[in-house]
Length: 148
Image 1 (spheres, rainbow, N blue to C red):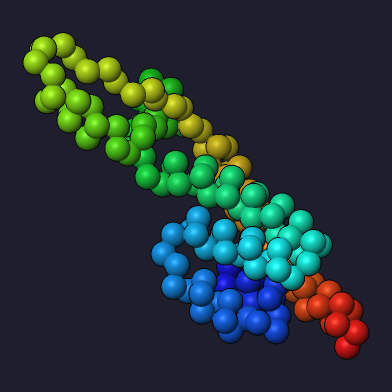
Image 2 (image 1 turned 45 degrees about the horizontal axis):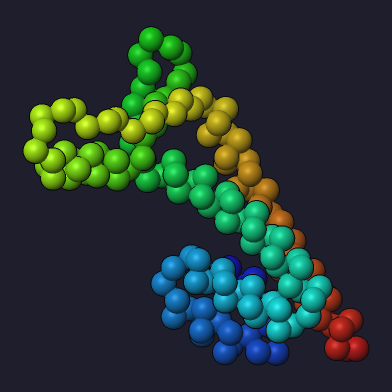
């Protein structure tokens, strides 16, 4: 993403990348890249927003899987059960705060198959290929824009 930003800001790359490197969250870094692209041109902004929206969507899918709990569904072949990572802690905390002995509700469980993981991996690869192609093309775009 830092290289992506540098190719967008071209002549102001060191300053932009320095600001980007100080940010700690992906959301903050993405917002900075979008803002920097808007400073470059409407074409940069449109291209970057579309690309980073795709990146963000895939990141959410990846994070959901990476930060949850998995289990194997034993009565079905090639299926995996998934629950949110924080759900057990929240359920326990909620149960401790009540005076009743009722069971706290269990979080929803989703079922995934190997093809779900494969599709996510393919989408991640496609998105990074797109970003790589844009990084290759932007210097050419900059040269034409500047009349070099």
